[in-house]
Image (spheres, rainbow, N blue to C red):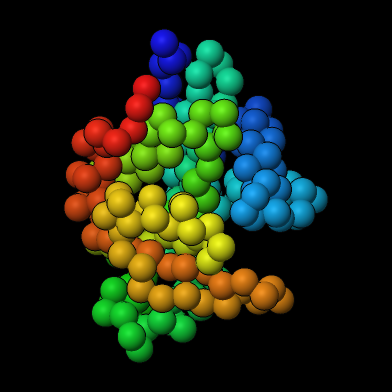
Length: 200
């Protein structure tokens, strides 16, 4: 029998202890395959994470079992993120969703990070975090990015109802970012229904 998952949501700010746990999980998740990112670079979430949470529409959702952090998701308004505005500008010509978001960036939300510890994957924790992250949001459109080589994660996002609208090269890197999107209300409704393919 699996232990229950407790979700907690933070808007604007979160306690230092929460950010310590988020940082440890973030480093664990993204230094592993298929990402293989640098642990020191990832550790900087301890500085920029609270800043992103403080932006308009900033929300952090954590998932814990037995008091241990096992997943988290972080989002904020598109208008607060110059990097994401630049990403969508590269896709605007071929994507109505991207061009509409650029025209009204305060009506779009960016899911900046989503991570689940390896031992707890397959339980629907990421889905629960994202559902809580998008609950009661007023923005019309949601955007999320995933590294090109993370094909299983991209497939999971498509299974949840997001559509890939293009790929954008990452500055100073040989890899590209897949950009996926969905209407926020539709995505939140889809995520709130338990996935029959998820066990436990």
